[in-house]
Length: 93
Image 1 (cartoon, rainbow, N blue to C red):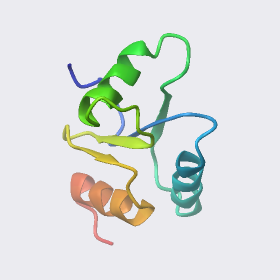
Image 2: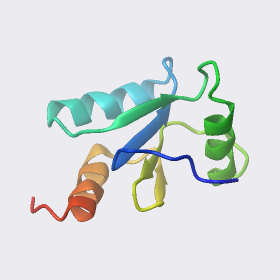
Image 3: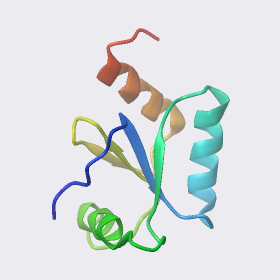
């Protein structure tokens, strides 16, 4: 499975109904942390859903976050996402 292409340092693979996805996005929004979102249940998101399953032992676990360096995290804390973004952009805390 190939990693989805993204133009953002942080891409969240999520669903509309997932409380963990909503919580992560709310916490990132509070600190104005930039990210893109891919709804894995949206029309045409079959490849995104397949990628999420491929990095989660065959399970469609959301939120799964893809970083611009090709690494990923499953259901990360917002603080971990912000720390990774600082690492990727070279910014200080």
